[in-house]
Image 1: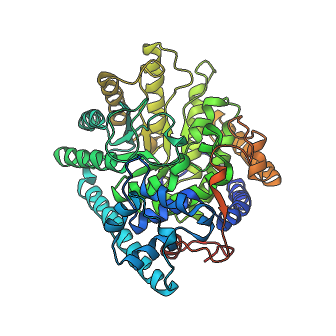
Image 2 (image 1 turned 180 degrees about the horizontal axis):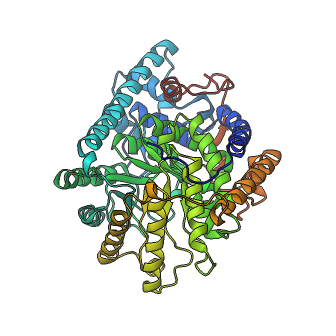
Length: 526
């Protein structure tokens, strides 16, 4: 339930910001509706049952899309489902044949009515399974709700070995963590396929694979039963395989997905067209699976100054909100991101950080905001770092954040050890308990420092959105208006995987989800 607002936020300006966000995203949505990508097609194939991997390590959905080549503009689903009809097989029988080299594009096309009927059956089966997983999650959250804290305490594991990740994740949950994020192996976002099976080697994190999702989900479910709290699992639905990872996460009941509309563009130099097309389909899947997405505005403050560029975070949040709603996500699934990243030497920095956090809560009252800890100004002084994290914890609780990524005292030194994570959890538990009812007790001066800061930042946010509307979102990104990072609209990784839809393009997964979610675009091909 949304809390009463605390700061004198201008409703007129917030309404203007939302109106601008709609105008900014509308041309992008039109572009999305007219195009597909190799990833969108592979994702539809996965929903139809395409799975498995060739001896070469290439996943079956990639093999199919590679067979099609330029014909992906017609939609890969038609050819896969046609092969099922023509051979009289089911996916579990056809997939190994494709892995062994069977070229489904050489199969004569049967009637469109037969193909569509078979596709509808397969999509409904897959989506029914996803809905069952979502219902199970909801039932468990309801069963254990009396033991749940606010905000949810979120920690990361990143060993590179899924089995070691399980050990660390379960220990963290038993110590008091509510959310476990498995960090992906470095640069996985830049590979244009999803690795297959369980993995034990990764640099800076563990590969996101469906089997790794299953292993961690099973372990956390067992821990949840033992401690009588539902432990949420998070991974990264970003990069060149956004919608594929979304659907694999939906199959294995992941609860949250990092799924930002611009992160891959700004920080991984993935092409804009590719990113926006892929993020839309990935968000539709997350919406249907009742997954909470986490957006990446916190990252802006690692490359741009958190005090002077705070308005860029809010501008991006308004844009992310609009893209999310257009994909069928509810406000309570929009975990908009922000961060405690100002220079700690600034006088009254605590008030400015609190103003930022309270602004986010007041402007997006229904959203499960994800609040990120200090990283940019962590120096290796573990004592000062612990103090900074404590202040971050205090701001989070005072401003009623929803998802709280705990800061580590050794941030910037090494991947956290067990005891680093233990101390972070204990710090969080202490602060959250000590300030449990503080939000309901406190009021802010309507003409004070925090109110003035909020008014300034909101005004700058509207001004920036006006500029973005004038320049267009692609133009604004080219000019470096977000995160001080500039990208070429026709450059970056993955652009070759974008295709304009043909007149007879068909994607039964998108058709089904649009109908179920009540979204779509009048220019969309059917």
